Length: 176
Image (cartoon, rainbow, N blue to C red; front, side, top):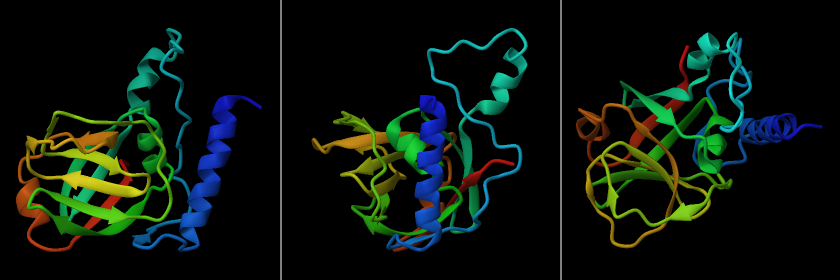
């Protein structure tokens, strides 16, 4: 069994567990994968000339809707990024913290390597610990906290306003 097929089967298993409601704040919006969803290729695998035009379609772009305001985000090919993609669609009730972020402990690890960024940018999407998804809506100097990178909102203009004060409803979904 190839690594890609094995990863796909693992991710489908994780999605099935989430669908059963085993996470604390996750409410999957649908159970079936999007029609036409394709498997991703490892970074080091170069597309053939025939695949070159199709490569654009395989980008890891998702929609992020914050309290009804739509954004797009690009998800990186990291363990944490793949962990989020495996759970799509996903709606979370994200709590406020420090006037710069929304977070939610999902109860299921995302994976990915932790690092300590010097600066957190508005729009960064990261995992704190193993299972806490964090959406940052303000830029600030990091005080030494470790995160696993998931991706970032492509244009965070208006993100702080959409997040508002208190709890935010945030939906992550595949781009149609």
